Length: 198
Length: 333
Image (cartoon, rainbow over the protein chains, first blue to last red):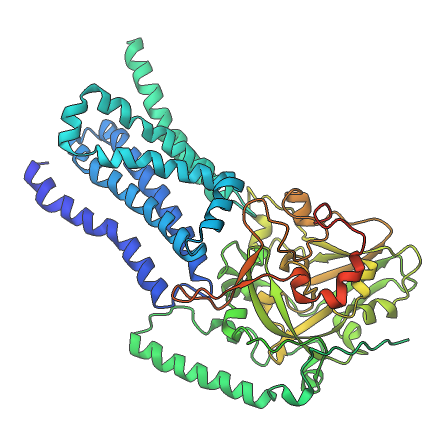
């Protein structure tokens, strides 16, 4: 794939595509089409989209290695930033529509609800990755950049724990995402080990 | 002996909107919605399905009974949650996990014929056709608050009769300390009962202490908003115990069993630290994952979320608080 096709065609198209879930959710939410309890639906759906974007970002490297399509790496930063975007919207919607930014409620949630703390930690850890995603930071940090960005594995595990904790009558959805995550993380553990053995 | 307790907060019969008026309102809303969707180019798929589940399907000898429904006690004057919300936003996991699933899959619940087994510590056990169960009971409308454990709530005009009246007909013996209720188990028709990785077991089981069951607030409901019970709301017969979280109000009952022992109820078995046997609405005792201090009264919107403080026993303390005097409600949550 030629660089200019990726940069001029694929990237802009993907940029718009990634915005679709957020735009449609907020449009449906504010036009009263998310059912009688839109706050709950909006926050939950944004949470699932956060996980999806994290997983898609983590899938770029395995996909590149399996298909040999090296241009895929050029999409990784944008996908990662979208993951941060959706996690932020998830948290901001939770704070706005479910807590009304009441300091007392927020404090209670962060002290008494461990699954909120786990989810919040994932967001906090994701922020430095977003900030240092630029070329400038990458150059400045050199090898440390790679080490810092390995935090994404920790973030993914925190997100998975948070998601599991929200399950009520069924673990079905959670288990589907867990199996995908195990593959995405396992790929990184097994490939280097095999390469070393050769 | 029938003890009639006068309730000051109950609306006088004359204050209640006549059926013809609210039916007319629904027709008007339906027409308005129809015009809207035409204008928007059918932007709301599935809208209006809910109504079709109920329209004109009053089996089990309910047809005549529904025409002579009397307003019952303990009503509230709070605005009712619209029919479409009551019938499209449901937790009925036998029909799916999403709130919209029960309305979508409601047709799969077989409700006719329907029978209820009355068993255990009663003098007249047996399996009775629903028609025979209902025959001697006059129906009344009870406008109750419904508080879900998930921190949302509705106001619903149920139609039913006191559970205690039914239990007395079958002469409970002195061994009847608890009432166990069971929902229909029919995995061929109810997709949720076949799902793998479910954290709850089927059939769904709920229960009450006998004095709770005999409290005049507890009813068996066979309808809502003037019509037979929509399937997604637990047709053809369900329990309503408005001072407890919604999951206690078991749907689509096939068995009522009286016993000396406390039942192992479904949610309690699934997560005992989160769902107690009593499950009385209590703003002071948080669910481990969220606060129960307030609730979103539906319909809620993003513009105005309609948060209200949750009341102890869902505001029915006057009728039921004495059932729990001396009990530590933090321990027996």
